[in-house]
Image 1 (cartoon, rainbow over the protein chains, first blue to last red):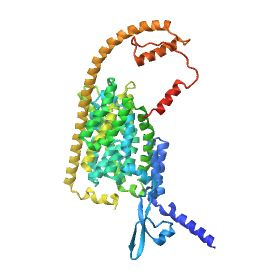
Image 2 (cartoon, helix red, strand yellow):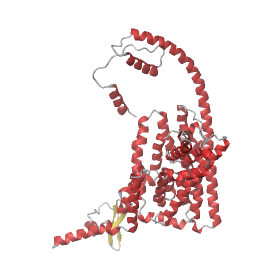
Image 3 (spheres, helix red, strand yellow):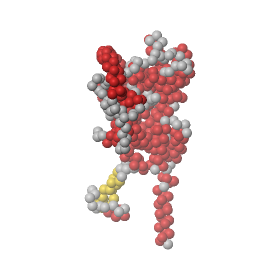
Image 4 (cartoon, rainbow over the protein chains, first blue to last red):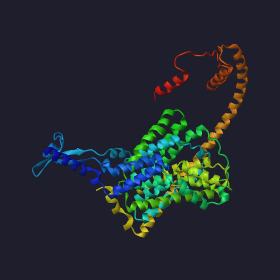
Length: 412
Length: 140
């Protein structure tokens, strides 16, 4: 009889601690959303490198919320310590109403520890290190004017900030939401962890979703704002850039930005360090490690833990809906201002600049540049805008890091 | 109390309309101006250093051109005599040409560089394997 009672107690205990009893409707909704995101990542290949770990992190945290639980301490009586096999010696104790309580530390969940790299702002700069190793700033050095397009596309960030303020968000939250318009995942995560960590899940998911949707969001705006004649402009071939220029570029950029905008230094500094590894040609092994092993490991940690911040209770709120709408607005405004400045450059240069390259200023490397190339070729199949669009595209990475520095300075 | 609990209390709902306008205008103006100034400064600096480097390299290139013309003449004479005089141990002429080109590229084709002998190596670790080992064991 005792055996059967023990068995029943054990089964009841397992059922009570199982998800069936502890999860609520919000968790189940998030599980469905995470499965849809996994489908989009695997089947439609929408930013799979990040969307897949994000979706899986989301799934894990909604199945087992304790995986993101922070470590804490509990106070146990001597009897409780004995029942739970917890040693009393060496633990802090206190006496309350004649009863001695012992401090018993509990450990945090796995993803809580991995999340510290996001929380402390470590992962995004490391991702930038890898991106720097993979980026060729040659087209930007050959045509430095494209930096203007990279700056113009950041206007969406600041205008969206206004929208967020009027929707009732704080200044810090508005800045974190606006940075979605930079179309740069690591930058968005970096700014959000510093300014509005409670919105991280919603902002990261909105940012990466819109980056995946660049080929769908941008073309209508680009076509709406340009004429057929403007879209058909064939640009002159870029001059070759010497190795010395490519080596000096990261050093000069980091000096300039770190002096004028120290808040942007961690992101830009790591980006330029990675680029110097690549261009110097003397540390091939480090460059390879940074852009392969290191970047892949950080991507796994970053994606999974960012996804794990999207628990049902945090994510299924009106704020998330507002963030998704504002994020789309930021993206569209960034694209529009890039194209508008492209048109201004078209006029000023007497028709030598194709305004389509302006939309690439929103970062989202290299997808945004590919969209410029594709729309350009629809008008003129012999037109190759890709390398011209890569200039504003990489300028957008620098521009959004600078904008992030400005927002951190103003809103922190 | 965690941040998520505090955040709604700090919301701008209690800010007046004019305060919201001022806060937005401040960020927009500062953002525009700083981003544009920093990136325009960057444009000017890139242009400046590109100009300096191009000028310096153009001057250098003219010198190199003259030197390389002289060296090419000397090298062509040397290669002709080398092929006839040195011991290449049955190695095909094409292979000799490739090795000579590689040597000329690394050491330069001055009169001091001379290939005395090319022999097939037997056994041991191949050159590719050696390169692999070196690449993986060379310290930082």
